[in-house]
Amino acid sequence: MHWFYEPQFAKNQLLSAETRKHLSALRISASEPITITDGLGKTWTIRSDAGEVTQLLEASSHEAPALRFNLIQALAKSDRDELALQAAIELGATSITPWKASRSIVKWDGKESRNQERWQTIAIESMKQSQRAFLADVKPLKSTKQLEADGLGIVLDPRAELTLEKLPAARSYSIAVGPEGGIEESEIAILVSAGFKTVRLGAGVLRASSAGPAAIAALQQLHGEFRS
Image (cartoon, rainbow, N blue to C red; front, side, top):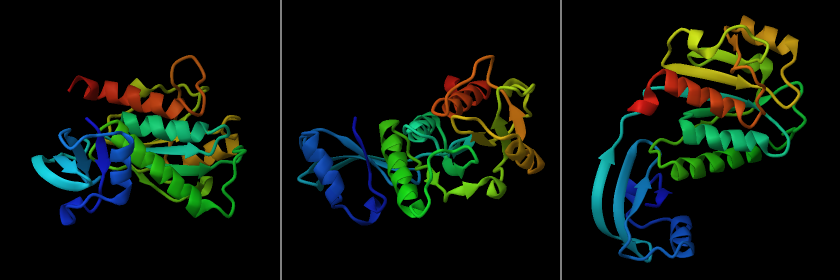
């Protein structure tokens, strides 16, 4: 079933122009049910004709995720940061913080608002793709000194001795992932002084695009979320 994002749906029974455009592009007929989410935990399964709701089949309120993940993703070249954002949300990330790391080749200078908006659009598409009822919030770009942990903060570092299964249990994690060239020692020191723990993921070294999603998936598994 196709999912669509309508933040004002409860107040307006006419679907937005964007949703109507997608319905037309996908050639969804008036008899085919679709699901609308407001991104805040509510969903409606409906039928529509020419963008007008013709039948409400089901309305649901979903519980907020038991685990919260804030992915702190360093800006990376070749769209690896956006690939990480997309996969992380599909796996359960609840917020994303773009990070201007020292070794980030990509720069947002003068384009912070536009790029934040682009990442939020990707977050919306990833929410719909994974059929989640809660929209991940993309926060403003942060420097290393501005980063703060929401819950238990971890920095992914292949040289660290600590592994994920040895972390204390938490319900909220902030996962910092560096750019292609890695995280500078001075930045790691700043993050550790801010309460972050350095953690490694197995024996290999993952790309900037896969490290964050891998950590989220591993923590989900450790907490038994994939078994529910």
